[in-house]
Length: 117
Image (cartoon, rainbow, N blue to C red; front, side):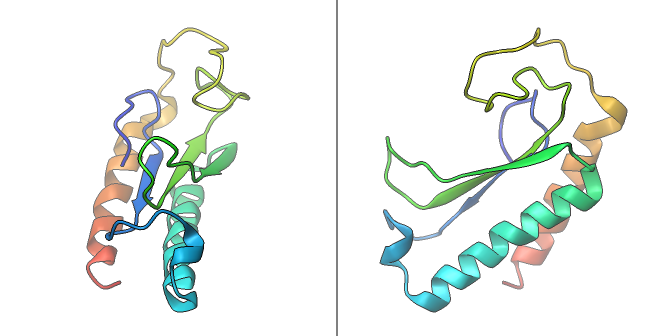
């Protein structure tokens, strides 16, 4: 799970070995990695019912494979910009109903399921 309290539905899916690019993985590893990204997205959508999901794979500063999977809500402080974009409203949280709790529950469920991946 991400570490920004304004974005409780922010998860990072991180490849366990140091690899810079998706094309460095063999085809089976690519499919597995993306299946995990899609599973996180699906879980966020069903549990948190966001207005949008953002997917991003950057790694420019430290080249290692990871995907950001971010539940977005129309009342978050950057929406409709990216979370790294220009702030659209104050940082005052509008935690419609219990997003922190839902994200924490999802984090536990994903950790449990990743043990079987």
